[in-house]
Image 1 (cartoon, helix red, strand yellow):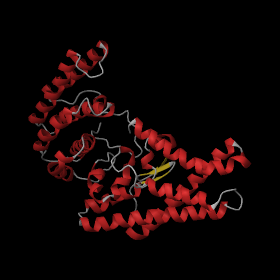
Image 2 (image 1 turned 60 degrees about the vertical axis):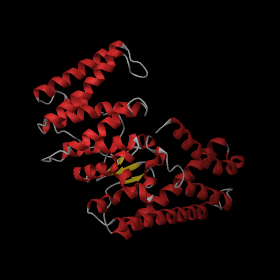
Image 3 (image 1 turned 45 degrees about the horizontal axis):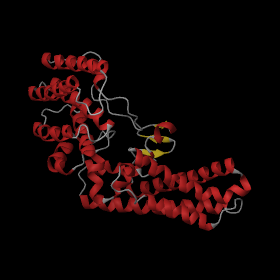
Length: 352
């Protein structure tokens, strides 16, 4: 999430807190007013999410694969991770839509998926309205809050679902927009149900129309699916089409993109070793050698210390040696990007 998007989201939630804070400050004091404002917003969120889950469970009649009920997450088992979720504020709400991956993988007609998306969108707003009414009903007699306070809060929460359609922070809410559904679903790193054939087919048709960040995410998921699902064949054409586009944006899309792309080049090499595919090994070496040249020339955009550059060159050369000898390097997890947080269980591309 970019800094300006973080500030936008922080400002939005600050406004929501302020709506409840100012009516309370005269009678409750500053600290208590802030605490109660946050608690009231959390109650609305919690109740709305529970109602939404119940409605969708009734409509779909299927179990949920993924849920977020802050501060808990569910992907087969419940986990308590309040701090980690703060890195993904867009995931706190509307993750229910992700569960349509079951229908998507079963090959349900897209018209049916669109109907389900509309039902999820409608039931979400109904859930939010009911939750706001419930909280108002139980608090308006004991707290100096008028009905207009709750009306304004509902309007803001409602608007939040439709703001920022072209920004990263909107997250899973973009899934509810019909033409965004497939690409956002395929970009989720934690979904294990989608086959490599699905990723490959989608990229073949759409790779020129995707933003670099979404393209990188979907392509990395394709690589993971190849590593996890023992396929007999790899679609080489999509590698030759996508990698040049990704590498072209190496220095323009921010630090996370830069790091993810560098680790992705190792994954291409791992695929070449595991599948005994010389073309993939050569492709990995081609781009890794480019990295070495850039490190030696000092051509990285923000500059890099000589000691760090030298260390990186040693690591890259070690991996290239493994590519030449067709063997998986020792302590291979060094070559996977493991520092980013995950709210669900991440995929394990290579078994120890």
